[in-house]
Length: 482
Length: 100
Image (cartoon, rainbow over all chains, first blue to last red; front, top):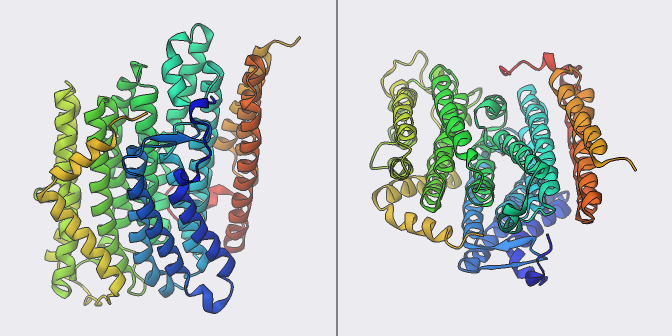
């Protein structure tokens, strides 16, 4: 495992992580002084923005340190940038929602930062043990954030369900890592790739069972279908800004690790492609079909996030550099419009007693023509209409599949997106055309959430009109991968 | 000398018991204990592999995992307590406000 060529202890490799963590600790120390506690969102924001600049600086750097435990490459730094942007958007959305529901405690911002730090560690490593450590650093704050509304039984339930499933999944993951370690004597992916052909006999069996258990562990984390049962409950029960964060942040982190592990580290196991084929088809289809009959928008978006995980799994089934870069493109696109959709839901939920059921939507189109058109735009993006970035995400993904000969997979994917149009457009239909029974209580805006909407709308449309640049960046990101 | 496979069989058996425990137990505390059992089964496997190949990394990882398991137990128990305050039960069949 020890790669002596990279034994340098160079803390600049961990710059972004340290910045985010320092902000989190500062919040934890100062949060109990009332006047300083009010500053905690600003402190968290400063930490995140510093980390953003530090990771932008790391772009183009290919180095590893800490005995091969930390690897800095374009893949890692681009994912770090994605996580930080998601966290900044969440922070901007959360502030007023949390103060309205009297949940605005300094700890939330500290937990958010710690969780982002865990994601960065995950994306930044080629060592299985460090990946596991990062996953736990990411997950433990998330469990607390899901159950943060202490007085709300729904939030408690969401937290406990997430905790049980998450802990169960990490146990599988750890067992898988133990078996891979047993088979190869190393946990470093680079060593695993080079040593693969020397693994023989019984050890091959260990390796396969280990990889299977790692797959189960990450299947839980990203919500692939046999392991998806917790997602709808957790998404519905958690406070909405936290749900917005869940639906993109941990998912992107899980896929970052999965792409590194399965598209590169274990790519020599030929059977994996078939396994991902089945997983992708199941995940897309079940996610989309169950989403059809939901009457809560958060729950519908939960199933839709399962379906989107299925689309990204297509890239893993296809494998190879070009497919992985399209998966990355899709993750960026999905993070943008999904966060935007949740921002609108958060605005709707700041009215008293709203739980984002479909029945609360009628009259929305008339009361807020602009805001409801923004929601409609995000729904179009989620279902993959041009000229939004959702269209190009799906287009690149499925054309990569067709190019590598996975024609049936692409066909099933496209058919699934047609199914998804029904439930996404139901949101548009209900908010514009249904007759309201009671008059629609207007929504009040805050500057922070207008900024979030602005960023996500401009991003969705701009990248939808000019997707080339992002595609080139994502291709550069996976160049010289391990 | 006890063969390696014996240790591995114990490890896998403990893991299986833990998995079954998570799936069938209705009590939150038993559930937490089962998860801990699964993590410790993985620890046992790590140590076995590490000893059998004379690479001591596995021993260090076990300490890492023990720390993580402790943190997980702390978070889990705290959540069980908040849940008990609201609902006066820790039977997971009763947690059905959201369709499970």
